[in-house]
Image (cartoon, rainbow, N blue to C red; front, side):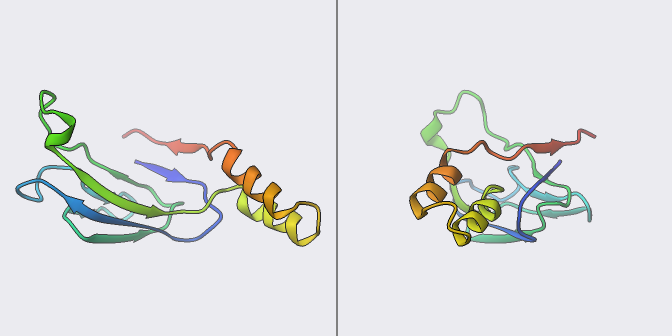
Length: 117
């Protein structure tokens, strides 16, 4: 379980595809703050508050399987922590559009607070 420091209130993830015979093979999303499990399945959309405890469980995959024997794909929509400061500098004509993009893309990722239970 962990929290993320993000400049927005909500994050979204969309599990677009999952090639496993049934949904009880792990990789589930947990809302730790509320004690809720969202069972992993294809075409599942989840919205959560990054500042609240959340996480995913390990998947029940045999270590001997080839990487291509199991596929799960999806999309997460989150925002860089560097965006608000870069946007403010852009609005104040302190940075060009190119500098804003370079600052956000090349900047270090946000630290994640991890709590093990």
